[in-house]
Image (cartoon, rainbow, N blue to C red; front, side, top):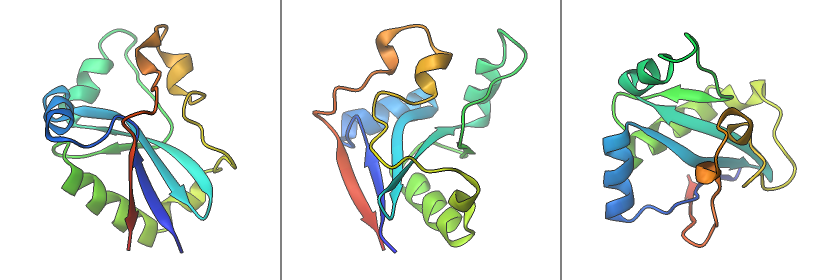
Length: 124
């Protein structure tokens, strides 16, 4: 089974540090056997912050980590694939780069990704 993790904003050190400080990562797409799954990585603190306005917060495929780092993301996705986590979701048959649920939740252009920095990694 082929599993790819696509980091839409890349994974250079400054990008990793940026997301580590923000305590969430909203630019990751998981590809399994040519189906694409939107996932969002949050820490508990970042999730609590998001809940302040409406008393709830939801995005498809939220995965809670104790810190936002590439190693934690790789580990979580690897284990979730083994647990068949992604079988519970309907994957898209094309790249969902700029048509994810994230775009309906936030009313700004900050959730768009130009794609020029995207880096992909195959698990395995």
